[in-house]
Length: 301
Image (cartoon, rainbow, N blue to C red; front, side):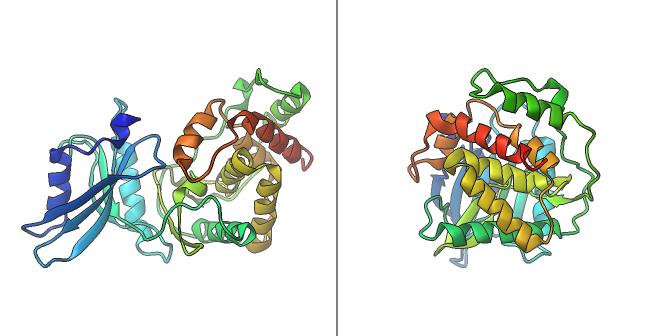
């Protein structure tokens, strides 16, 4: 984790300054951003020769995996999103191979706002989160990438299950033939850690690394899973009802279940890292809250 927060090397910062496209730029601020667990994310402020400040975000992949495709696809998505009215970052530069920046890197504009996990008006907060989804799903963005579908045949009963019957029923239901769906553009990682807020208004949706074509439930269900992990099934159900009212469609429980059982033990540690000091996560209770969510979805099948 320290490596993730460490200041980017001079090579990467010089690349970012060149990407601004003007001479005699000055780097005036570099700071790590909390939230990222799969990449190193820093806020940069670069001032050009005309004294114009450029607030940017640099995302760098530091592990040994091949992230060239991730960088290229996110860059393409950010360019496409510039033609929409969504509050999304704009692409400044991308280095998929890492040849120039030293690691696969995306450089993008920095949106106003901050992460918000303890809103003063939780109902209005969830309403805005739900309302953003139909806007995302209505976008006609050309991509050949498709979301991966969980292979439920490999799914087993968690060792920590309080009620093994819930998970047996979930495995049986998830292995049924999938229902038809109309593919749409999805964010792919739609959840509270990838949203920015200004005065409790949703001001930005970030981290478009996993955007693909898929079922709407990929976003709705993933966000509901995150809500259950942090706040419980009531918050997750409230989000579903608000989304259904705004979108004019019901959340398919089959795909909703697939989203829920993607939960991996150990998420608690990563989620506390993402939450930082904004809230204290009840880590011991996470597994039980996820089981409650799965049981609730099964009642809708």
